[in-house]
Image (cartoon, rainbow, N blue to C red; front, side):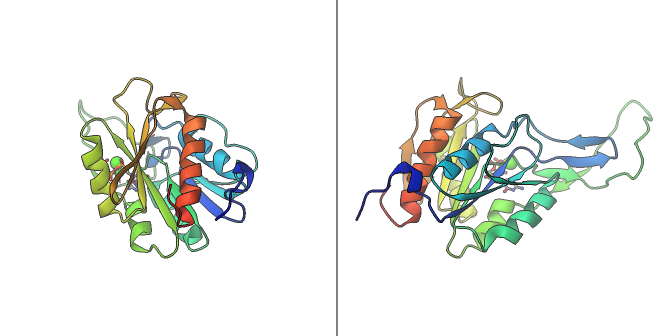
Amino acid sequence: SRWFSRKELLAGKRVLVTAGGTMERLDPVRYLTNDSSGKMGFAIAEAARMMGAEVTVIKGRTSVAAPAGVRVIQVESAEQMLEQATALYSNCDIVVKAAAVADYRPVVVADQKIKKKGDRLLLELERTTDILETLGERKEHQFLIGFAAETDQVERYAMDKLRRKNCDWIVANDVSAEGAGFDGDTNILSVYGPDGLIEALPLMSKRSAAARLMELAAVASRGGEP
Ligand code: CTP
Ligand code: CA
């Protein structure tokens, strides 16, 4: 065995990160989206780049700019994110699905702006494809890391998602905790593997959490102990 400096931990590795929230169109001027800022995904992309990886980010709607030195692919909907992610998948070593993907989208996308009519409007929504689950089904050599945003029973739901989506790891984000969640600059993450908790990170900046996560992932994806 040998020591790797941080700068070369991911040298020669291709890392794919999804970041931000998807936008599900309702009509030409309206869509459904969520509060994701993209900060966590971008921090992960930046950490991976600093460790020497070749990084691609598939981004939805974000409220901050993407880091320099990474390839950025802009998408809108969950369907578009799925398409780009599956196209790049076979060429990746590590995939981190930090995006907040819509679970439902409007059944009908109107060609024209929807006019108001009556006191109530009922929107019919249908399920989107689960991108992470699709990647899990097609997993070959990739080290696949999913996220889980939870408000309660964090470990149970995280482990459920890990198994259901055939991930190597699930990074749980307790979004009910103070200092964690979508728009802030800090987070509280717990990393779960097939045998349970790998590491619980205390409250820290998204940048530091991303650096620690990618350091662990670099070692684990080489087959080493974290
Ligand atoms: N995810 C995805 N495609 C979807 C929905 C979710 O790839 N259509 C991914 C997210 O990017 C994340 C992981 O699945 O990496 C978990 O997302 P989360 O919303 O926590 O879990 P869900 O499986 O959607 O379950 P629920 O929202 O009901 O808790
Ligand atoms: Ca969801």
